[in-house]
Image (cartoon, rainbow, N blue to C red; front, side, top):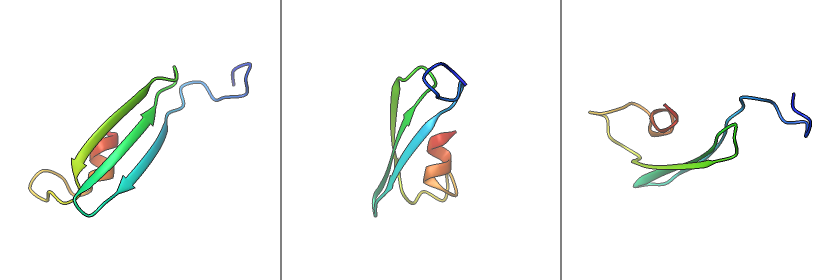
Length: 55
């Protein structure tokens, strides 16, 4: 644990599953934000958009 009480190496994720797109926002351990937008349904490429986006 760091001085501010946060866990070192921890990522945070926020996911919005929509009918057409799934949006993913992630905060890395350094506090930087990353975003990704995937088709919610794309069975030829992945089974679950949220899991694919986190990878």
